[in-house]
Amino acid sequence: MERHLEEKSKLKAFQDAYRKHSGEDWVTVRDAYEFNQDEVVKALGETLGQSEAAAVRWIEGAEDNFPLTVENFCKWVKEYLDSKGPQHRIVVPG
Image (cartoon, one colour):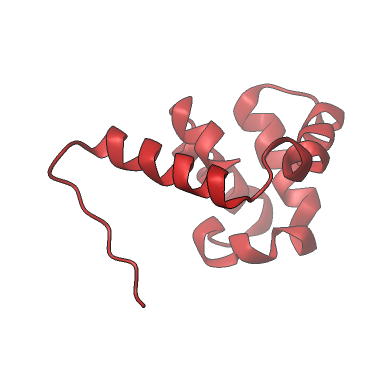
């Protein structure tokens, strides 16, 4: 979801909308988004101009549409690095 929002330059708007609806910082609580689904749905719908029903369908289908596989993870890391330029590095603790 964050990658999609970032590609549309709407991640900050989503984070602001989430804070408005939940009173919490998205980055702090995003790992437990399933416990705050109502707020996520409201913020996502508001940010993308979608109905809450459309936002629910998007969230429910996210894991099926974007499965976490080794191949996808590598692709996403490459896309991230490509977007940051040739001098950007990431460190993965071992």
